[in-house]
Image 1 (cartoon, rainbow, N blue to C red):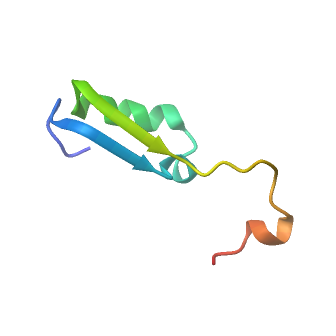
Image 2 (image 1 turned 135 degrees about the vertical axis):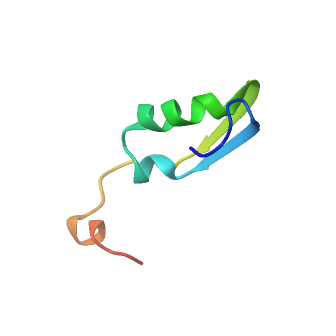
Image 3 (image 1 turned 180 degrees about the vertical axis):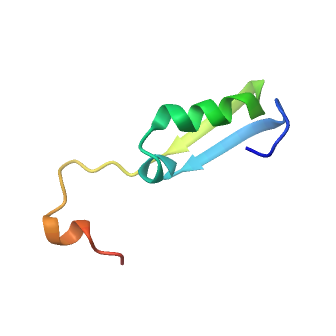
Length: 60
């Protein structure tokens, strides 16, 4: 991440884990830039059940 270490007070993540399912990778990259007293908020869409096959490939 092109930011200096410990420069972020608040980080907002919205839907990032759907783009990169390797969640630990996301936090490994984020951790150095968040200040020790900083806060990370994450929001993610979670399905209660699998989508039907025809909905899994929709782009709308």
